[in-house]
Structure formats: C-alpha cells, structure tokens
Image 1 (spheres, helix red, strand yellow):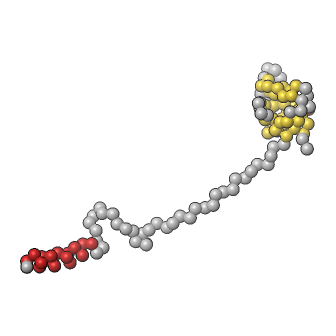
Image 2 (cartoon, rainbow, N blue to C red):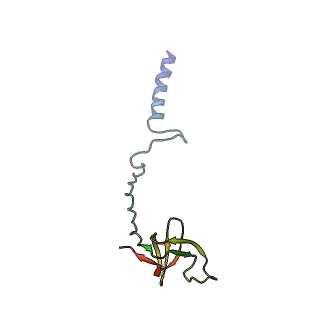
Amino acid sequence: MKRIALIFLFIPFLLACFAGTLPPGAPSTPTAAEKPAQVKHAPKPRIATEPPSPTCIVNAESLNVRTSPEGQEEESRVLGWLHNGQAVTVEETRGAWLYIRAEEVSGWIHSTYCTKEK
C-alpha cells in the first residue's frame, strides 16, 4: 500500500518536471517566437554576356604576331605567325595595332594586314 501511495506522489512530480521545465543544458525545442526567420533565397543574378568580339581575316601571306604593339625588334618579339585567310578575334585596339586571339597564339598585329569581317 505504501508503494502505491509513493507512486501516486511521484507521478505529479514527474509531470511537473516534464511539463515545460527542462534540466539545465538539455536541448529544447524553440517556440515560434524563438525560431529564426526563414531566409528567402534571392534569384540567381543574370550574367551579362559580353557582345561578341569583332573578327578580322588576315590578308597577308604570313603575319607576325608580336608581344607588344610597337613592332620594333628590341621591344617586341615574335610569338607566332598567322596565315592568309585565317580568322582572328580582336580583343583590343591601340592606334593602328590590334591585340588578337587565334587558336594557337594571342598577341599584337598591325591592322593593315587584317580585314574586318562583316
């Protein structure tokens, strides 16, 4: 009989312990006010595509591609050659010089030897 009385006394104690108060350090479930706000992800920014670089066609039998636009042997060395009819992409213009990109080489050529593609 004493055991039953102790159980009935112990049950309200257990209910009081677990009714909303937890021991220190125990993980708790956050209430609606404590929950962090959901972050809405912004749409991915559109990447601006650059307009296509102009192309030109080599109109010389063999054209030197150089390291600098001066074209003087002391200041500019030859990186490679382009052939008549070869299409290149113009990346930059400096005076009469064009910085071009081709499949095998990039560098400076004189605009006299390259006809702009229409």
